Image (cartoon, rainbow, N blue to C red; front, side, top):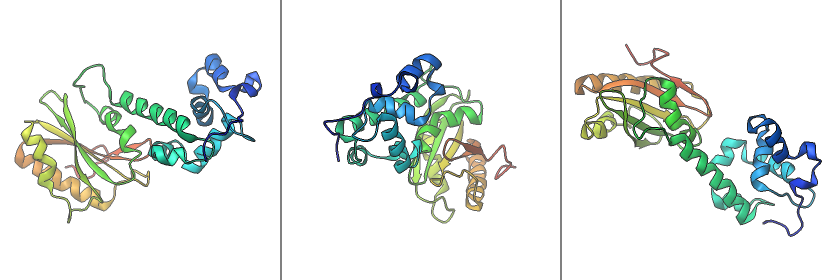
Length: 233
């Protein structure tokens, strides 16, 4: 069901409750998720103001991560959203993704798990399927590029370790950081994760390409397997 001709706008709220005014007064970081989404929606529908509509949308989507995962068509079909609001939401999400991927330099320096996670966590944390990506680094730990290697459950019986290093060899990378996501949102490493990590580290030694870390990405958090001593000597 699309947007209705009659709607409840943010301006229908009392001044102290209006998200735009609150953002101007106290900053965006002080606003709730519903208030931020309401600013993007701009108006509500009969019986629901913009904040209430945003709160309902977030509840149905399962929070911001669920909203991130929803397609334009899924959003458009939500009651009270329609084409314009769906486009506004997807545009804002894409701006956030591009901002998370952008860096002051074309080839960012990656010196810690946090820096590596910053490059990939926004996008990978919202994936519905498990994916494995490899950050290719030069001799100074500057990012060459990020490559997607594998989709599906991480299992030593299915994944070919050589595929992880294929692009690294072609790019003459000196080191790699491997990352995969857990769609459940829980980044706790599984026994399979540890086994794959051990195999990758050993293969890297043979190829003279150091595996600096293996990151497991969850929803807004990650685990460094090297920091935990899992799969690394």
